[in-house]
Length: 184
Image (tube, rainbow, N blue to C red; front, side):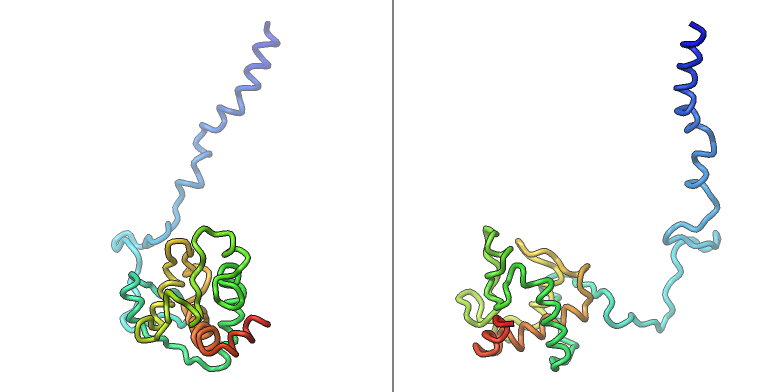
């Protein structure tokens, strides 16, 4: 009986060790927590300097689709931007929208709602820049939609504008360029 009591005590002992004060040392230490000031007289985050500017290519907060629609594309749609956009489109957009942009990607074929046709060969959207400005496309990529996920965490604002430039200059430009995009 003595041996059984000793065995039970030895089995229970490790679970009781968790209750000792040292188990809380990491949580209750003298340190600065996130968004906390080390100065107790001035709690909270240190404000940004008055003339600070955001770094180009960092997160751009898009409030909603209406605010995005009003945004102006800051990226010049030159060859370099379109080339970057093509590379990013191939990684993030091709699975659903396909290389041609008509919504014929391998993942898109399996969806109940077919992905949008991003080309001008489209009954639903003519993609006229007056009706659907670059900001509209940027907002849809940033915020997502009914089936489309948001890519704001995956692509920087600059990268999203490159994708917009690729869609505008290649997929929506003319049938010859669409055929070239499909061939690549």
